[in-house]
Amino acid sequence: MSHFGMPSFDYLGEQIQTVLSEPSTPHGLARALRHVAKEIELHRYHHATERAWPDGRIDQKPTKIQIGGGTHRVDGFFNIDAVPPADLLWDVREGIPLHDETVQLIFSEHFLEHIDYPRSVKNYVREAHRVLRPGGQIITGVPDATFALSQYPGPLDPGDEMVERWYAKRSCRPDINTRLDLVNLVFRDQDDDPKYTPHLWAYDYEKLVQLFTEAGFATVEPWTFDPKIANGKRRWGSVYVVASK
Ligand SMILES: C[S@@+](CC[C@H](N)C(=O)[O-])C[C@H]1O[C@@H](n2cnc3c(N)ncnc32)[C@H](O)[C@@H]1O
Image 1: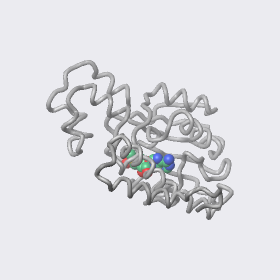
Image 2: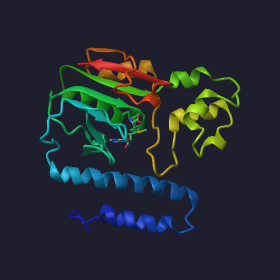
Image 3: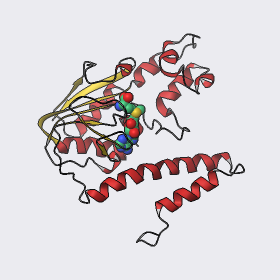
Image 4: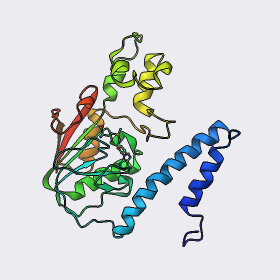
């Protein structure tokens, strides 16, 4: 039991695994519980870091950070991600645990669409503005919804480039039957896969400009893809912007 007198998250996690191992657990309940189990796993990592830095600010003052980089490391960048491997395990929905105006450059790609809009997305963009120095920049790349929507309506060719590049090796391939299925994947990819956080919102250039402008950034412009920083597999079908404080 925790000090609040509530069942601890670990205990809850064990109970959920027991229920999930029961073949009789209905699909809808199992689906919801898998999401809770995933959140408990993220919370376990986050909580371990939070215990080390209870005021929500770490001692280090990295000047270049990557958010949600996963296994994509960038030389010279301090990686913050909810799960390993990362330099700091932290759930960015709870803020960015860095001091005000200490960061020169934030890089993130294919991360923003995985956190809930508007609460966590707008909070994240505000936090990015807080930790950046005056003149500092944030580069953000996401799957480009305009790109997916521009091909709809229309038939789905058997050799569709988006299917080949993004989904050919994945288990969802047999269920991509129409162009609308591709649009759906941009909006809610991996919705029922316990290994991944799903897509929760879709973005285009206009939406990215609006978000960063609303948070007080002075300029927001298209970012020219640089493979020295960005993941090469994201070049195709993504939209990137760079916002300056
Ligand atoms: C689709 S992967 C992209 C990885 C990498 N940026 C790339 O383009 O290959 C999304 C990443 O965001 C991270 N992520 C998702 N939600 C997060 C959160 N709330 N806080 C921190 N990282 C998160 C995931 O753990 C994962 O590493």
